Length: 159
Image (tube, rainbow, N blue to C red):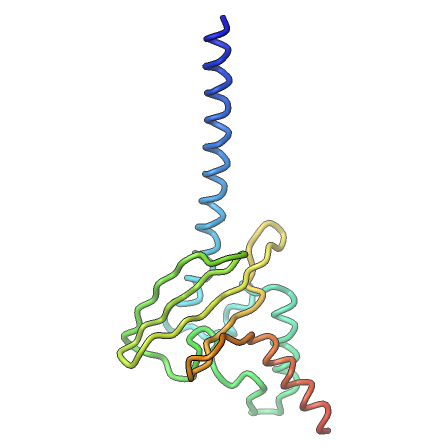
């Protein structure tokens, strides 16, 4: 009887551990899939607002509102590619980083670049809360959200 009880307990523990691993893998897949969805050809960063957190979306909307008709706001490049020019032969590697981040390595014939996505949970789904682009000179990655907010604050000070 004790052996049977032992095996039943082991089976239950094994199944619950399997469920936990399955849930973790599912969450990992969801994070990677969210970021991969940004790299579909012929889409513009602004087309992905439903993938962004309310906070990040709000900052982008402030930037758009501050720009004059036909003008470019503080964000004058595509943060998904970390620049203005799309590389036709780009290769992308996606991996999970630390603390709900997804790290994308974009490799083009002229070099590689790292782009880091900070994700948050919102209503059971993951949303992109910030993008960290690598400084073109190879320096530290910088926050796109903070870059926009700093630019908007400087614009207000100079008015």
